[in-house]
Length: 156
Picture 1 (cartoon, one colour):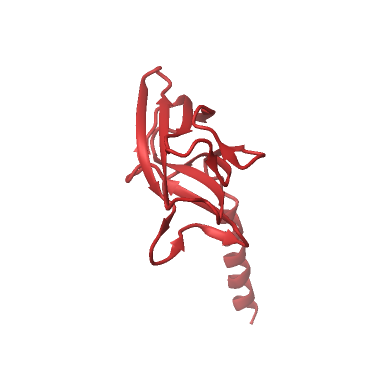
Picture 2: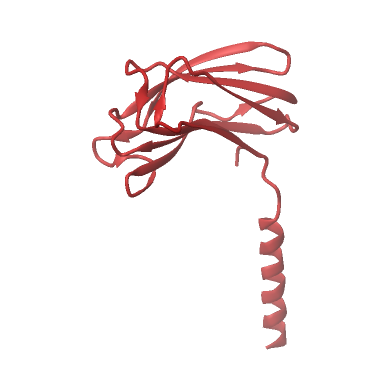
C-alpha cells in the first residue's frame, strides 16, 4: 500500500509542477462604459515578446450583449513590429452562426469570445509590438459592445 501512495504523491507533485509552468500570455482590453464602440476610436495595445523561437496565436477578444445586431464584426488591425515595419489587416470575424447561435461563452445576455485573427500561429520577433484596433462596421457607433481587445499567447 505504501508503494501506491508514493506513486500517487509523485503523480500529484508532477501535475502541480506542470500546472505551475508559466505560459507566455498577454491580454489587454478596452471597456466601453456606454456599450458603444465608435469607428473613430482606435484602441492601442503594446506587448513585449521575449521568445522568438515559438509561434504565437493572436486573438481578437470581445464581450458583447445578446442584443448585438450582427453575426460578425469587421475589424482593422494595424501591427507595428519591433523594427517599425507596419502591417494592416482588415478581418471579418464571425460571432454567431445559424445553427449554434452565438459562438462564445455566455452568461445571461453577455457573451465573451476569443477569435483567432490568423488561421495559423505566427512567429514574432523579440521586442515591443504595438497593435491598433478599430472596427469598420457600417453602424457607428457600434451598439451593444462592452469591451474589445487583443490577446497574444504561445501556440500549443
